[in-house]
Amino acid sequence: MKYCIMASLSFDTPAKRDGLASDIKTFIGAKHTWGETILNSANDEKGKPTHITEVRFQVKANMSDLFIFIKDKMLKIPVLKGTVSKHNCPHDEGGKPCVLEEEFKK
Image (cartoon, rainbow, N blue to C red; front, side, top):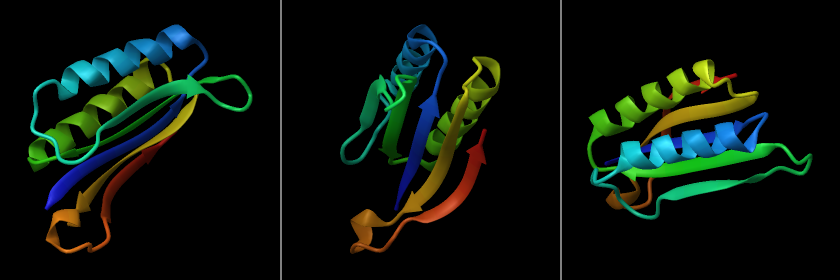
């Protein structure tokens, strides 16, 4: 079992987006992950700064901690809109689908 965080966030300034992207990268640091980690900062079709995160951890506590971290940042930065969710992912167990554990939307 792997433990996944997925986040899709929209900001009012590139500085807020880039600050959070840097904080997430630092948070992940040397934690044991599985598969490809996606940290993508861009602009949406309306020109708003956006950030996408997708990371699978080996340890469930790391998933839970990052979920709380991003959720807290979404309320404090503030994020204009977005979603962060955590999933239990049995990808390493024969291709079973992910199971959504919790989601926060703003």
